Image (cartoon, rainbow, N blue to C red; front, top):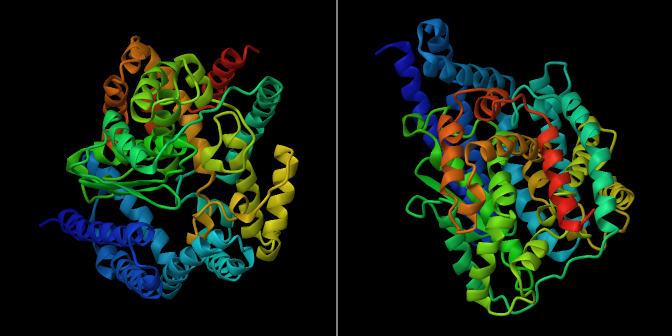
Length: 491
């Protein structure tokens, strides 16, 4: 057995253990008994210790020293690129710090959920302070004297920097603010009204998942406080949530998570349980969930099909035509919640979080001042005050589990989706006709063929460029939004 073969066999087991750890997290969010939180924190810490030990095993260093990457094929070289980078990063983080982060974030997640339910920020901030301090230590270890926040971003979007993200946001903000102002000056479309029982929502949401290509023989849909996807290969699970007065919350959360899930399911089976066998970055991952949810799921064509499906499931919806339904789906409206934000305002929610978490990591913002800072910034950006913590700094799970540097990848995903959608429209000229019949196969098939199957073979930038044929830029997204909402609101 060559050194490369031995390393890949070892890596296969490490990847499998990582999937087991992920399943523990999925269970904690969906089915774990409430009183199990303390024990689960210990279990998560133990798994992290095992994984850290494998990733820093001296034998890995010996294999890496022996392998000549140039002698490998393209796939082998890509595998080595990921393994070498992961090894270098893992070696910088002390094992006891990695285990402590896993333990504290597991406990923090439960406290966040309880504080959110209780509308009590004070119950969460002490443990968040622990998380911030631990993640800052990790970032400092990874940064080697460089920018701590850049080191954190690299975990989710390799080779991206805060400076590049800031430039992207600076280019986007003026046009988004101008479009929002123009739209909000117009009359608000009619909202849905009616009876939308949770059971009926879950029945239709499973049909929607299958309509977008989610394979239920390799997945499942459960409820969670915060929708998410988990797993890869032949075990990819998603969650959603229901609100009996807002079925769109359920349906579009589902379509969004199906985009994530289909990316993982669509990766070449030959890459399973290897570094290439998962999405290459969170920005690219988000491009799949956002194009499924927005450019496809909120299109005029697809909503005409969804309108008939919802009428069959719920009866009177409070809107009587497919055109009125389309406007209701795409209503630009005031609101606090990022995951429920319309396409025009969504990225403004990300900009708020990007600035706040950079300040937390740099030490410019104390955790104890987070709620006030959030509320002040939200009112300045959106023009109205936050009414309760669950609509403010407690609405997202990310900081409770230490995902600093993650939020900006949501906007990157929107930008990438804009590029992909522009190319997809040219590649599938009858796309609207297909979507109007509830047929997404041409679109999802194009995404699988041109992007999803390759997993981590290329860098994030190269992945989007290969699929779309263009250098990633916010311009296609902004043009799409301006064209769509100008027509919708008669601007």
